Length: 43
Image 1 (spheres, rainbow, N blue to C red):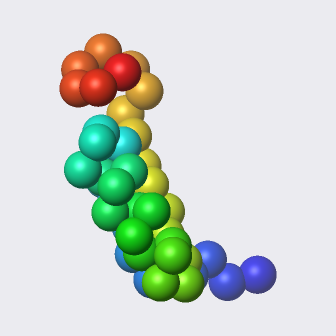
Image 2 (cartoon, rainbow, N blue to C red; image 1 turned 120 degrees about the vertical axis):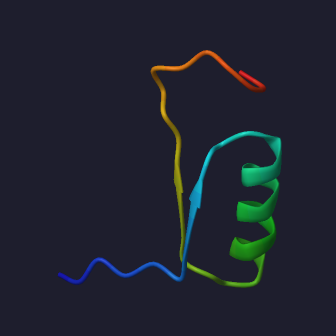
Image 3 (spheres, one colour; image 1 turned 90 degrees about the vertical axis):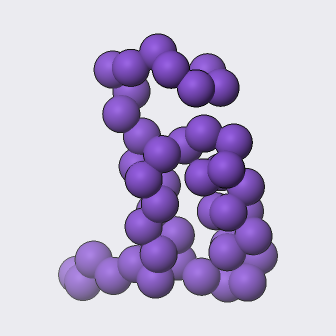
């Protein structure tokens, strides 16, 4: 099985999730990576 993504977004803050939504609506294969050990941003 091949692990292929069109876009990898680092950071699941407001901007990262917004861009992921836009790209998935354009049928891109998107992976969002977030460091869950931090308590920063819009959590």
